[in-house]
Length: 123
Image (cartoon, rainbow, N blue to C red; front, side, top):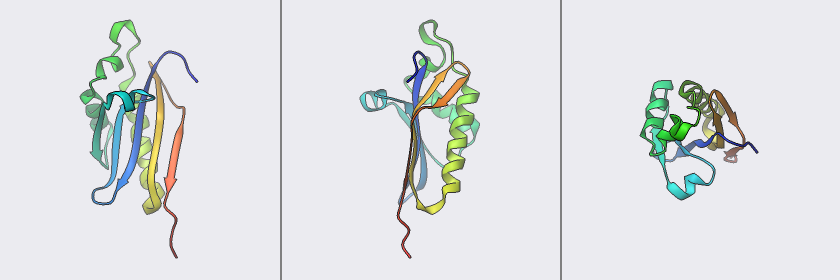
């Protein structure tokens, strides 16, 4: 879909015990191969998302490893925070809201694939 750049996963799932939980990590096929993710219960802010990104083993890729353009971490964090706010607005019927991949190339941040899973409401 896009060439270059880096793919991340950003998702909110609703845990029956803890409520909405954010996961960020390397996206695309890397999330399954490397299991490089960070988790937080909601709500989160930009600073917390930046800390989550820094926890990833793949963090050097975000910082411009091997001559690649560094990611605009504020733009990435803003996109992830917007995802969490959207998830919270969807309310108690939400099961999951996932962007994979969230494509980043320098200051460009684009959601290339989004999944929304909702519970059926019972009368």
